[in-house]
Amino acid sequence: GAVVSQHPSWVICKSGTSVKIECRSLDFQATTMFWYRQFPKQSLMLMATSNEGSKATYEQGVEKDKFLINHASLTLSTLTVTSAHPEDSSFYICSARRASGRNGELFFGEGSRLTVL
Amino acid sequence: QKEVEQDPGPLSVPEGAIVSLNCTYSNSAFQYFMWYRQYSRKGPELLMYTYSSGNKEDGRFTAQVDKSSKYISLFIRDSQPSDSATYLCAMTQTGANNLFFGTGTRLTVIP
Image 1 (cartoon, rainbow over the protein chains, first blue to last red):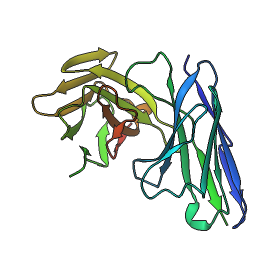
Image 2 (cartoon, rainbow over the protein chains, first blue to last red):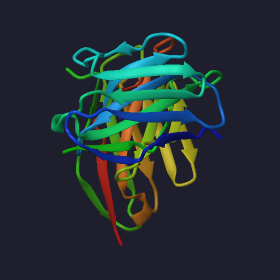
Image 3 (tube, rainbow over the protein chains, first blue to last red):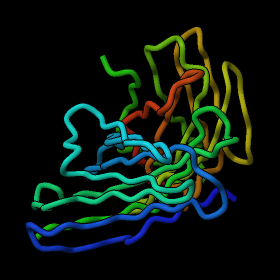
Image 4 (spheres, rainbow over the protein chains, first blue to last red):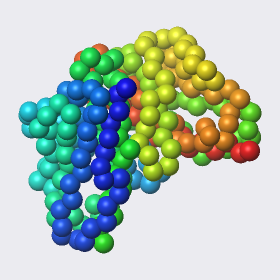
């Protein structure tokens, strides 16, 4: 159990367009979902935390108007990169916490590689 | 000072070797410690989960936590080429909403 599905796994878009990435918990309810960004050979950088039905909490330095996060249900969170530019090219990963999960235990999606031309 | 320090490697070992991966941390409130394995271009997967000090064994993997030294380790016995991945330590405290990650150690097991 505890599977998190992320879609798309990779996407290429033109500069100026918007891209939406979905994160779904397939077999559990996720009270909290997290979005990370990962650069090559670097660790995960937390971008924002989203709780179902409320506004996301963004980490310092992350533009909330550029990275729109919606957590409309207990199984789905979306990240929309608006007006994407080449510097937004990165590996984006979501994770989810189970409502009844162990303290700190997160389940990660497979990641989405975004390339902005 | 970072909350969690981890040697990024890279670390290369021959097949069958014992691998030791380590992290240090500065926040004495951390009580929950995890090791995640991340294959290239994939999301991390939980490998080991431990609470407080002590050892935990799961197959070829052993996780150790020494809270007095603020030091955690992951040992891999009889390492296999399929163990080649980046290993991330992570930890948190009671009531915290997120995890604090190390930078990850890239491991290559050579056949």
